[in-house]
Image 1: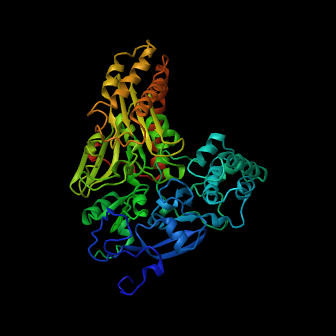
Image 2: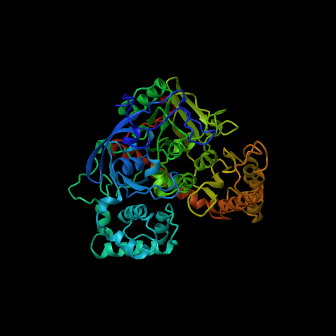
Image 3: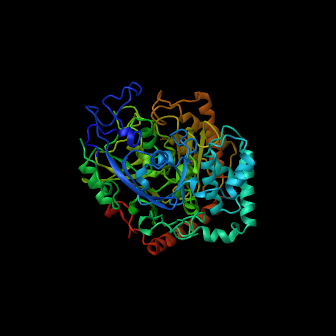
Length: 240
Length: 347
């Protein structure tokens, strides 16, 4: 595909245009690949399951981030592109049930994995309701990432302590609101879950099943990640 | 012009194929979590012809407990290290791992990546990695195990770095594990960053006390490209501890030790290259930070009295861990042998 001389890479993805020298980059920018002539970037197809739907994305540059693929190739703009350096937490998505920073996770790492973005929650659940109620005054840019971190926290600790809440929020920057409303929102979500029978210690057992896929899968028929693709966890990993 | 490499070649599931792929194509960049390399890639400063993903190599991920040592696989994530079992036997390393980034970052960031990221000696400028784990690993006396087609190489973690902070890895070489001598739990790790939350370090300090050999190791990091041991403070402290009674008789010992550690920031050749400070703060602030961290770490590791009981508890815990981890590994079908040369493996 990339052999076609008049192939417009921007038409596919928006990031593959690479020319000799890259004049728009700051002076002194170094490329590992010698910039003698237009370079063809190594691309690969990526197959993964996003929010329960198997997808195949052709021609993913090896250094494309998962966030880029989700937003620009798949049109899932729920995860936000904040800093691109792993500081802000706006890009958090779940990879095989584990929260990861979309901007620092290469799309390659999602091959054969289950990706969950905030779109999986559709009209929202008790976490989004609590966040909307307490943090609705803000712009909302940070909320998709925070929501996923909070759901992971509640799946592991249905009744988290304040320090656990604060630690789970610590990787998320919010420029609109202080941390207080977020802590309140997590508490309320935890109470709502307990009241509706989703939380409590019983759900904790269910939540951490063998595959560690959390009990937040939007579609109950969605199978857990295939065992073969699971990363072997260390011997001392929690037993659920 | 490299052809598009097929994906399986980029993400091997075994150690030997990974090393072979790296030898075949030196242009491949080794990527475990991506938390450092992807920052460069996102900024347009890195355009690799291909990545070699090592995050699905079971041999590289995990912690192996043996009688003499603890072996941490290079692709073990910081989230793995925060687990309670690791915290029980390697508190300094677990605390260092917990101080890195946010929870979402720790699920990807790995031990090997923390050691190997950054520039090569004499290479161009690169983002300066935080290397918080390095401070703890140096204090613990860790040995890095590297593997290439040429064979195995084992090197003290501190010697893995050139003076400018470049990583002295041969082409085609892969860090597979770090080996830590089985010590005791009298350890501590302290970090001061530019803010309360996750961030780059201004100063990191790791303190490792081994009551069995009566040695104290202390390392400072964050002030320069490479963390370094502050040996003179440890040697002085070892003479001022009542090891038999498990006590520190003179309360002023804490303050003197802290002052000696802070002096290590200034002493050339002990705590990083002089004048190469990665300073975001004044030297005076950093000196004071080192003093406070050293005192707090020592108070936690060696309270004025009564820590012999803690040492005993620790030994019981470590014993349980050894017994359990082997069983659990077999149960889960995980590799039983750590990624170290066969001669070094203990039966």
